[in-house]
Length: 506
Image 1 (cartoon, rainbow, N blue to C red):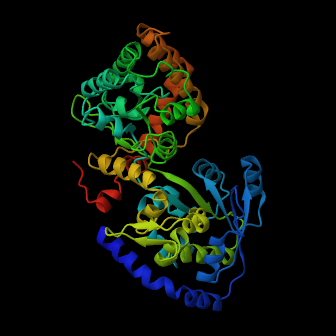
Image 2 (image 1 turned 135 degrees about the horizontal axis):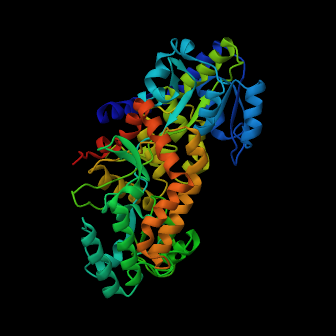
Image 3 (image 1 turned 90 degrees about the vertical axis):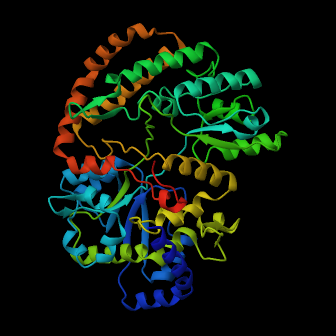
């Protein structure tokens, strides 16, 4: 895959110069303006420079409107709409598909093998039912968002090693940080901190029990009780933030930005503000690296990632084949490798350049000025170009890029776990999931802080079961057995950055 994508990018650099010719050719075919209804944005999608670049490149006219009220949107689609296509969230897509409000575009797609090839099989599986295809999916790459960000400079100054594997290693690390620095070793607020929970065999809140072949809550996993006991222990010993139960994003950011704490959960975009604040206050060497999920008793690291479909572009059931063909022409043009590269990253030499690894590096400030909204124009994701073009978008600053690279190059080595219920849609999920999640989070934090004894664990599980947990597990298991393909696709989780960064799964 790496060789293929690299060759595409090199070719793209040569082709982009001829985009004006391509646009003129497309214009000769002349088709009417395609009307698209997208989710609400903070900018005018018709006036953004990317919209103008797309028109110049393809010659196809598109008019955008935006929606922000789900109920009004559902009513409009159900009763008929003037729009040729509508962008739906994954949940809305399922709802509208089940309501028979979406057009089957499978026949028209037979004339667009280029569209079918560009988008991953996982996406097509998601939007297909009984041979009918109900939309153009935007498939998320399996990207590891981030683990525990730690102050690399503080570790170096105090001769502290971040080479930790097990929960015992991590406990010793917390002790060492506290003893050597006097700072808060770890701040946060999560009821279940993923890096630590992995050491107890935990990943998602609902997983497949391999022995019974059923969907089970992590409350059934002995590791959950062990995790809570361990978190309460380190809380009592002052090894994690005393404010853990009441922290929020602002308080955590403040503790990291002022140097009061050494570690916390860090998505790849998080450290930039911390580094800037620390350096402004005199910590000129402040920087962050990542610790990824710990190994459990069997040596396995449970690295959970987002691995689904973020949205689907759908055609209303009332649309004519002719109007739908116009829409598919727009889709096909945006999935062309050179065009996809252009509207996501701009023009080589103006908006980006390639470094010695052939990674795209944005040229600032013009990249942010011109291309900051480029990804909002995606209608489907080109599975071959997207992972590379997205690298420029995440490389907006060196700090952000280093955090992304460090987290993903480390995590990719161990392999990812996809969430079994990523594509799930059934009534009990909508009815119970949110309330049960809140119930668990509240109880977990109480146990961590010691305001609730771990001796109440069985009573809590009984309360959870009586509040819909039993019904949710049963319905999830039924859905799991009825949709083996969707479950398998969700559980398969291979990062494109394994190949890009040259790592093999351990």
